[in-house]
Length: 358
Image 1 (cartoon, one colour):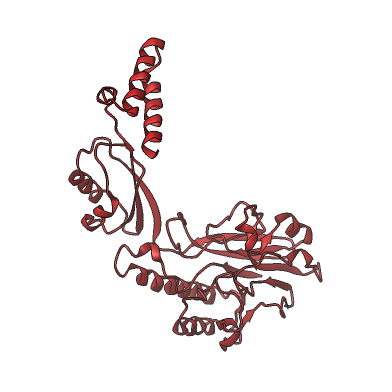
Image 2 (cartoon, helix red, strand yellow; image 1 turned 30 degrees about the horizontal axis):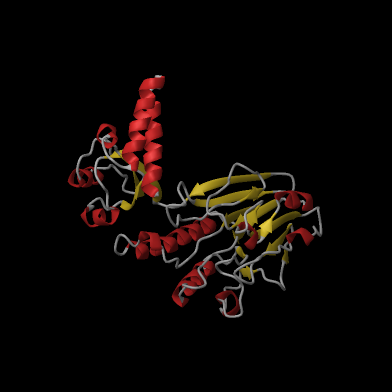
């Protein structure tokens, strides 16, 4: 039995992190639709009988009726494929949600409180989704396999083995519990980075399209083929763009004009959206907000300053101040105790940074 497994599409996501470049947020939303269409075309071409969507298909707060209509039209293109959806924390099954009010294509099955099991000839699907924006108490541990001779698949959205308070707000799931119940495959959603390869039968596919700089790396879908005795899965990349981080050392840069010139010369692939991290010791104060209007490199969306102040220790030691007294004492200590210059300078920098922060 073949299947495609995705999650966390977040249709009509606002993409606030892309607002630095005019129009890019809207372009990214159109790319979401295009990727979804490519998934549907793959399913149709390969005659995949089951399409699993493990939550956060759309953004409840922002999704437009036209987007839902477009989505449903795509679903109608694959009438021989059963589309199995569990609502997530961003698209919960509410009375006013499109899951509840929209007339979906006949091949769409949405799991909710009154429908948690779908029986097929060779497989049973168990679904557990959100009916509110939070789910602190998961009911999954109460589930029982009805027929162990069939393939048993769980579809859910939540935090796997999460320990933080935030994790426990979003359907906290224990991998130990899942294994004890005995599901043959667990199709997860909620975490946007895929864990493909770390666990054979409990898989987060990640988001098909990256939503920001906290989602680096490749994004796509899981394609699987399962029998009662075997499971084969593959990760297929879909996102044509990739969020990347690049580092630029500025130790030798002496002016803001030179810094802007160097930033615009950074080599970035056409498909990349870049966060540029400035590092090293700066020779002048940097005002990040004043740089953006002068950046012509359209692929640099964000600049982060991780530089440290370059200190002239000899000049500081002459100052009649707390900093001057501190530096003078440390330099004298270096000479008296024969401490390596690099070690004492590092200690002085840490001390001066602490004094700067108060």
